[in-house]
Amino acid sequence: MDQHHLILPPPLTRSPSPSKPPNNENNRNGHVAEALRIYAIQVRGFLEAAEVVEADPDTIEDILEGFDSLMGLEDDDGDEDIDPCVEPIEGQDSPAGDEAFDVDREYLQEAKTTWSKAEVKQLMTDLKEHGRGYFINEYVVKRAIPIPRLLYAFGICLCKQLRQKRPKTLLYFLEVAMTRELESREKLPMYNTIDDAVDLIRKSKRIVILTGAGISVSCGIPDFRSRDGLYANLQRNGEYNLDDPQQMFDIHYFKENPAVFYSFASQIYPSNFIPSPCHRFIKLIEDKGKLLRNYTQNIDTLETRAGVQRVLQCHGSFATASCINCHTRHPGNAIEDDIMNHRVPLCKGCPPIQPPTKPKAKKKPKKKNLSVWEQDDDDDEPDIPAYPPGIMKPDITFFGEKLSNEFDKALIEDRPLRYPYTPSTLGSTNPDQQDTNKAYQSRYRPSWQCR
Image 1 (tube, rainbow, N blue to C red):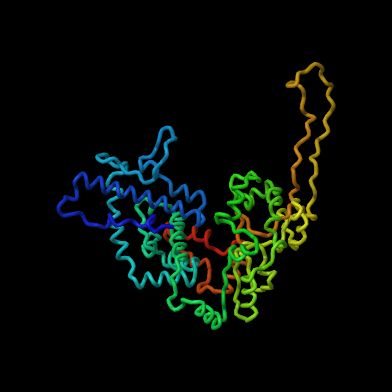
Image 2: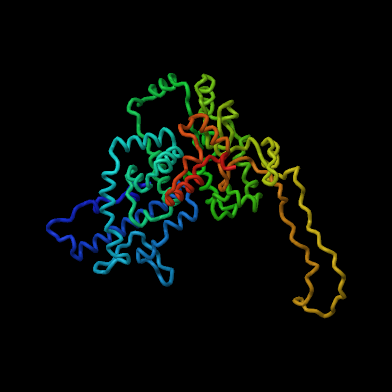
């Protein structure tokens, strides 16, 4: 995400020109127009970030709350397109007035002085070394630092309207900032060549390898999001009548119509593919006793087929399958024949479909000469569900499902947290802070502690 979607741009940081009085009408309208533009840019930036950082509908609604009316974009017919960067017409008052934006300059000045360079460096180090959970717990919960002030350290100065959002929304803003920081890696200047990389591997003893779809593309398995990836092909072909190609891996859609997934699953089933040299390289690292763990996003189990033992399939895999009704787990090959033949596999432990029983009713004498509309339809058979409740599903993580508990536990094991997660760390008498703590608990508490 472009940094300029979130940072207040330079124009508001300049002092008024001495040759022009700061309170004249043109300057006032220009200041209001610029503040409105920044508000629109920040709203757009955070909405675009929702493609990367999870945001529930309530958070999106809260971000947009009051946006249309403040920007003067309400349309009686509701048909006119909205330009998020619209500015007021010169000479017209802003719908919000000057008062709503006068504080922006104060926030900018505060942003410059809140954190020293050393403090910012420590904040970023804590985030990168200990993770998001530690960062939120340490600075938001324990130290009770307001999120808008924390965002200054990330180069983000929220406008007044966004500062007034709910704690859950403010936590989302911080999540966006942390994600942007974690995704921008600094190059280590001492490593520049392949020989440097080889020497680093030779000297290291606890290597974490992160892998994604790219290492399996050479095996014939398409990635998901590239121009020629799985989603693009599903969209292009249109044979499955999906509103969105991601529906293929949506848990709610699967429960409604599992036949769509099983008409397609054979195309990505791992028995059709063999490991690549990259998979074998991971196995070599493990054989040398240097592999701490291989975290993979892939569901194809090719790491396992290559013989890697210390691997965690973060999004699950075809290695096992479970019933969505009774949750009984079976080896993945138990449903392989169904997958390859495009059948919906059923759980053998769950009851089959039972046609609904109709209570016996007393026979009524039939009336003659009734029109089609007057005839009694009591004899109509009730609908029978297409599938029984016991549908088998590969243990891959669909949209709408949480990551497995094994993922959380592996992270703790491989990089122990420096703080104990206890209810006492969440104690605060400040009502606003209590709301923030609740938002933190719902977003960051490890999933196995939620049970």
